[in-house]
Image (cartoon, rainbow, N blue to C red):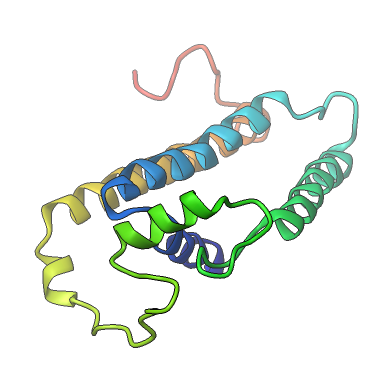
Length: 156
């Protein structure tokens, strides 16, 4: 749960408002793409099932290490990998300056979110993507334990 919230906070802090939807689309499309790649290419034929979990866990640990070494929390305090021009561009697009940091958050607009058609479209797409990945994960069960013939498909 913190994963999703944390990425949205980082997107809000690091992206100019006019580029947020593109950055969010790139970031969130990478997750299901990575899941599909890992489902199809996991070395389960070389490793036993626990070996596959350990292999994918090691890749995840490597990613966390890279993340901790290179991630900057805010553009206002970023110094190692962000140029001064890039920092000023991000802050200017968000109507901030290095001296004028807004700390108080406005109240969350629940009514506007619930009545937003784009919100419901994104929610529907997210539910469909997550459902399709769940179905993909159950394919080996249907083939072996349930002995469902894979050539027939799910719809007859």
